Length: 125
Image 1: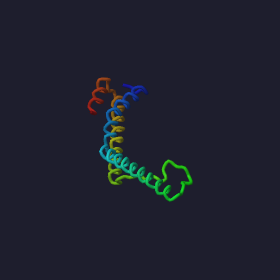
Image 2: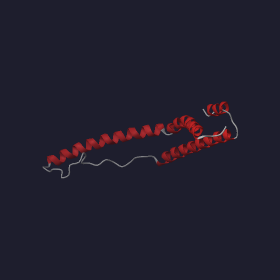
Image 3: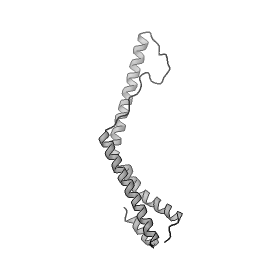
Image 4: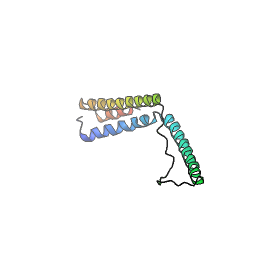
């Protein structure tokens, strides 16, 4: 079977539909923990901001520049080792996905039929 643009797009779409959920699932627990911590830190910063504004007002001072927050937010938080591992796993899955796409396209160029194409995609799961 000759690989046309339409066939290439179909193969890429089909393989990505299988691999993208796997890629997104890598590090889900870590991301949930990180988001919870960031929400906790944001709450802390808002509480600290309220306290700081009260201290400033009680001392008779005013804030010179109008900002949403007097106390600035924290920097980014992460666990480097886990982020590196997650990145490596995702990169490996992307490489595997691209390899599968290329393998299927090569098989099609070498004469695979539509039934064989569907079987190759089904076997990826």
